[in-house]
Each structure stands twice: as structure tokens, then as C-alpha cells.
Length: 286
Length: 279
Image (cartoon, rainbow over all chains, first blue to last red; front, side, top):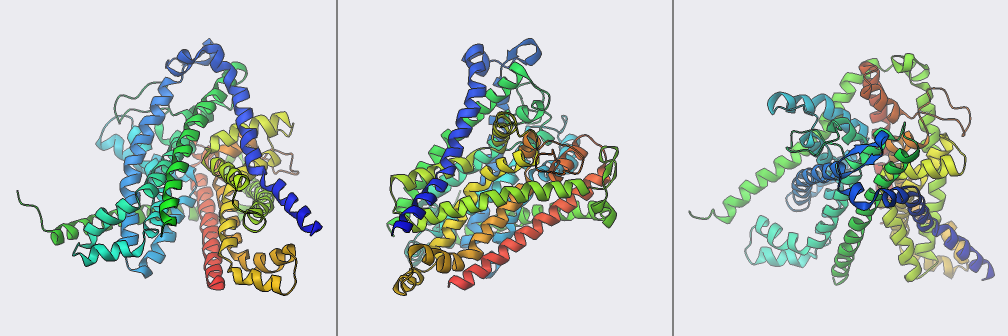
């Protein structure tokens, strides 16, 4: 019994490493990034798009706008395709075929982000440049690439949510004479709503946080984009592009960009956690 | 305007949904075929075993293969024991309560943090504060933290899927809890746990932002854990982004894609073995 207690204690200490890691990350990112936000002032940091590190100007508004624009576009594509695939695989697809398609979709999540970015550059960007105009490197190209990248996240969580809907819901709706599609969108999607919201929020987190693919297809200028064909720079690409040569205040400002990103992601995660807890409670009522 | 009949509407919707699914699978196949078709002709034994020359314009990718194996392998060697121990604690050694909620919260938050933020942290903490420099070990430790939540979650699912009858029989035969966990539960959950570990290895291999900020981009063969090393993913990024050599970029991407495909298939195979075993 004594040995049992000791093992339990050791395991607990190891189990605390995830939360300690999180604490360390928070402390170090804020320690490096927060001072410069305070020095420059929140207004000049968040609400100015004047980013000129050599002159001491650190305004990240254009990158915040860039991240939002690209993420919004990615969510439109990721949700339409991700949810569509989830509905097909759970409602309209023979089980044998779904067993092949699901791992294929999951494989999409395994492809390195640099490969997505590269494919965007060699196929998508020239198409946009030729047929829609602009430089090709654009909000649109980034949205499409990111949309494909968040699709597996949206799909697999939505599939779990749809499969967690109790079977009698489906049977009851079909027995009342509803078609399969009526059942799918009036009963199943409604019952799985909070799970799907979780899927969307986690997908959004991935889109905001993605770095390498966006750098390659976004063009990265220091301006707020005015159309979907304009190039754009995101918070993540700002860090990755300039970290290599930044020092002093400049480097602190990049950590401050990281702080901004970190806070956005934490807010999204908390919302997702609350949503998925509601969904777990509903699932538990089965 | 009359409303379409529900049956007609369903037909239209099903066609639309299936075309979405077909396009998605089409994108996957297109990416794989496109990269392999352009890259495989340039992949040879020499390409895999030679060092790069002229920044990668000529020569092979041997140091990057070694670097990738070292960085990703070490990351998983660190993350797997910690993650599995965490999962064992959560499933076998405690009841749901404030402590488990806190551990899960930590893992969930960690899972959502963008890789570039991990990169910033690894740079300032491992490379600078702990004086490890841009090195294999800085990169591996940062990646280990990044994939820890994946290992925890998949291991937890695998442990929970082991039927409780196994545990009862083990207790009935007089084993201690630790004997029960190591001899019975872990044994049956092993394929499930391995799935998570292999998928994490895949994530480490394909990660770029983290290694760029923590492991550096040296072209030399790393001789120790404290040497800087460039991974395959970062090498591919630099070759294509700086337009150094498109054939070599495609060839590197092919090697990367094949590695990822192999790891995913291994994970899938392990998962099926696990499901067959537990049922």
C-alpha cells in the first residue's frame, strides 16, 4: 500500500507537467512581450498600422486585420466543406466506404503545412493572378489554403458530435416520414449543435495560429487589405518573417505580437471548452 | 413559387454534398500525386546519402534526414513517457475531481497554442535562458511540449477502452495496482497508445515554425544534441521560398510526404489491431 501511494505521487508529479508547461509558456511570453506593449501604449500598439521597427514604430493593426480577414475566409471554406463531408460520412455513406474515407480525411491533417503553402504557390496563386487579377498572393489564396488545412479538424470533431446523437432521434424522425436530408438538418445537426460549434472554434484557432503556409501564399505587405485579392500579413507570419534578424525592442515587439496571438487563442479555447462541456452534458443524458 | 418536394430537394442536396466530399478527397490525391510526380524522379540513393552543396542547389539531404530523425525522435522519446504516465494517473490512480480537471485544462490549452508561440517560447526558454542554443535538444524539447497533449489524450482513450473485467481479474489474482497497470492494462492498451505516439512523431516531422526558431538551420551534420540542425520540412521551406532549387525542393517534399504517409499508415494499422484486440 505504501508503494502504491508513492507511485501515485510520482505519477501525479509527472501529470502536472502539462499545466506547468502551460504556466512556463505564459510567463515567458508575457515577460518578453508585455513590457513593450506598456511602453508603446496599447493604442499605438494595437490601433496603429505603422510598423517600422528601425524607427521605433510598433503598430500591429494591419496584421490583426490580416489575421481576421484570412481566418474569416478560411472558416467559410472550412465549415462548408468540413461540415458537408461530416454529414455525408455520417448520414449518406455506406459504412464500408466511410471507413476508407475517414482515414483519408485524417491524412489531410498529417500533410506538413509547408507543403500546403508550396502547393498554394505553384497552383493556386498563378490561377488567381491570371483569372481574377491582383498579385495572386492574396487573402483569397490564404483563405483557400487555410480552409483546406482546417477542414480535417472541423470534419473529425463534427463526425464525433453527429455520431453522439442518440439513435432514437434519427429513427423517430424517419418514422415520422421525414426524408434523410430533413432528418439530417432538422434533427441531427440541431442535436449536435454544440459539438459543431466546438469544431468551428477549434478550426478557427488552427487558422489563426497557422504560420508557414500563410507566409508562402499571403505576400506579407505591411498594409491593411482592402479586397480579397490584396496581399496580407498575419500576426503569425510577422513573427516568423522577422524573428531571424530581430533584436532588442524589435524582438520584444515580436514577442508582443505572440502575446496578442496567445490571448486570442486562449479566449477561443475557453469558449470551445465551455461549448464542448455543454455537449458532453447532453451526450451524458443518453 | 412552389417549394420543391422534400424528395427532390434531398436528391439535389445529396449530389451537392457528395461533390464537396469528392473535391476534398480530390485535393488530397492531387497534392500527393503532384508532389510525387515532380519529386520522385529526382530522388535517388545518392540524394538521400549525400550532403548538400551550394546551400542545397546541388547534392543531397543526408544531414537533414539525420536532423529530422534526431529532433523528432528525441521529442517523442521525451513526450511519450510523460504523456503515458499522465494518462495512467488520470485513468487508473485517481477519481475525477479538481486535480484531474486542472490537468485536463492544461493539456487542452496546450493543444490549442499555435506552433509559432511554442517556437517563441522554446527560443527564449530553452535556447537562451537555459543556454542550450539553437540546437537539436532545444527543438526536441519544444516539440515534446507541443505534442504532449496528443499523447495524453490518445493514451487516455486507449486505457479507458480496456474492459474493466481485465482489471478485476488482475485484482482477483492478488496483484497490486501497479502490477495490474503494467502487466494487464498497459499490455492491452499498447497498440492504442502507439497510435498516438506515431501520430505525434508525424507532427514533429512535419512541423516547421518551431524548429526554425529553436533548432536553427545549419546545413552541417549534427554531431551532438547541442548542435544546430535543419530538419527536412525547414529545408524544403528554404529551398522553395528562396528559389534555391525547385527539383531539390520537390525531391525533399517527396521524401517528407512518403515519411508522413508511412507514419499515418502505421498509426492506422496499429489502431485497427487495437480495436480488434479490445473487442
